[in-house]
Amino acid sequence: MGWFPLSLSTMATQLSAISFISAPAFVGMREGGGMQWLTYELAVPLAMIFIMVVLIPNLYKSGIVSVYEYLEKRFNASTRLLISTVFQISRSFATGVMVYALALIIQSVIHIPFWQTILIIGVITLIYSYQGGMKAVIWGDVIQMIILFGGIIICLIYGIKELGGWSIFMENVDVDRTMAVDFSKFGFQGDGFGFWPMLIGGFFLYVSYYGTDQSQSQRLLSAKDLPTVRQLLTVNGLLRFPVTLIYCLMGLVLGTLLAQDPSFQQAIADTFTASNGERNIFYDVII
Image (cartoon, rainbow, N blue to C red; front, side, top):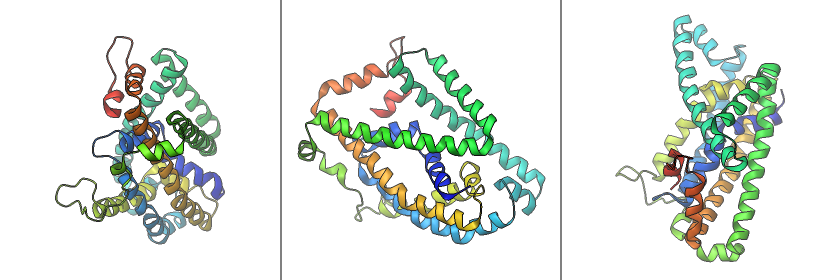
């Protein structure tokens, strides 16, 4: 496949309902949060360069379709079985959390029972994945990426409108949360979001994720040739930052709206309150 659908698919794999909820919440609401989240993104271009130069050429030229196939060639079948099993189990838990978050959003919007929401998401995903294989997964990601990005833009515009305009937002935004990079914090003395730990940690995080995680590497290995892999990695390295920046701006808007309108927090609490009167875990995460 070409670089355009693969680029959007690669980005969409990292963006989900979890990102839609947690990234703005961290920036705008979490104690100790803020735009410093962006420091992680400075490591993405470095990771993309490393993957293009060191990892992908050997993987792609070996003719494999999964990183586990490479492990079998490099070591043995038991290594492939062990690591692929670990991936399946860990990915099952991660996917369960993502589906849970998405189901909460759909349930709060169209007001259908929670179990029906889970069932609808699962059945639809299984059907199009089974019918179309990897191509259906990639083009499904493209559609989801467009919806996610369009959705965050709509929410951003709506939030600024609720605040009374961009000028009102700029006057009332928490200035401490707008600090994206603070070189005074090195993070080695208890600062959880110091510059160097986030940059170095982000580099290894993204190299391991894009270069060796099957959910990402299968996109790279689906490219029609090696130059296409380099193109999609370059596009991903350039576009991730502005997308994440918009998520962060949405968080600042939410935090400002929360501070200006006390009824907003109550509305959030009501949205994430189950029928039995108990708030679910995502309310605690957000607030």
